[in-house]
Length: 128
Image (cartoon, rainbow, N blue to C red; front, side, top):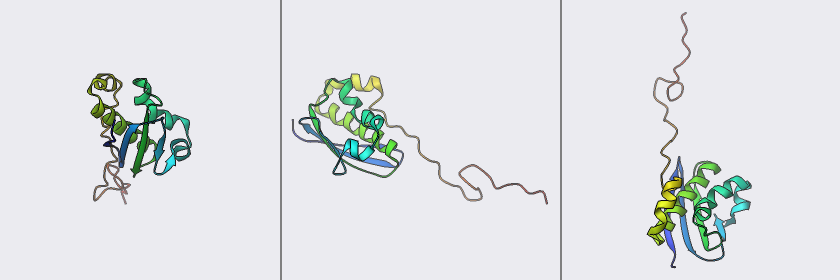
């Protein structure tokens, strides 16, 4: 398998992922995944596509991710890895689609509007 390049997004974070056959190493921004996240739950989120397909330890993943928080970054990486696996083998699509790994979560922070204190919250009313 040659290198597969895909991208994933979540909120304001964008992940570019390069997947190739290997020993299961995941490198995020030139750091190991456990060192980057410092949280086993987020590393589990990143590995979910591999566990769904019983492919843990078969692929090396190189990730460039920026923007958002670490939770959104983990979900963006998961989406990008899932897209890369489908691009490499189309038969994996139904299993990943069933788990919801191929759906981009569109929820983002709503922008602040003029004349409002926040996006929807108005300024405090003063009768006098």
